[in-house]
Length: 166
Image 1 (tube, helix red, strand yellow):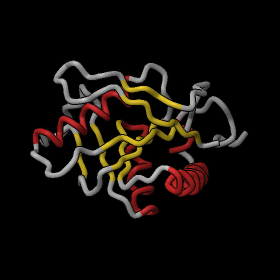
Image 2: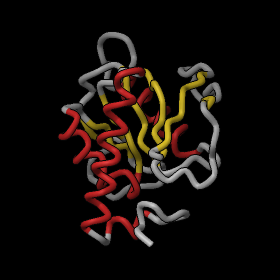
Image 3: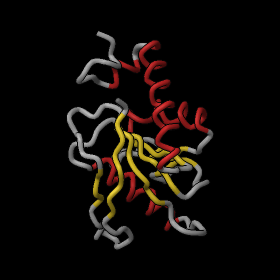
């Protein structure tokens, strides 16, 4: 069975097969263009190995900057920043494989907010406008609620739409 239509699948199955990867990129590009019509965004954000191969390709296809967020325990770079990329927008969409506990999407939102604050970004802070889950594995909610971040009081509770690839 083709990895894009099979469920559940693992990202390594798609990344190891150029035809599957190309098919996933086409599906994601089409879906993101459709999402953008109703939920405008001007940046894409993702975290870890599951999103890294996708962000660059999708950013180029959509003409938007990308924000690549390192995992909390990732110290593999000489760069002290947890977020790499250019904050050239105000509304970002998170790209993730799935939501099970919410740890990754919460980390992405916190890391972006913290980086903007630490670097003294001018203007309003970037806003997460939703999350596209490309391997949903059973999560069927139409929204995701970010809890209030009480660790340093910068993020209020917020509910955003969740979108799916299929």
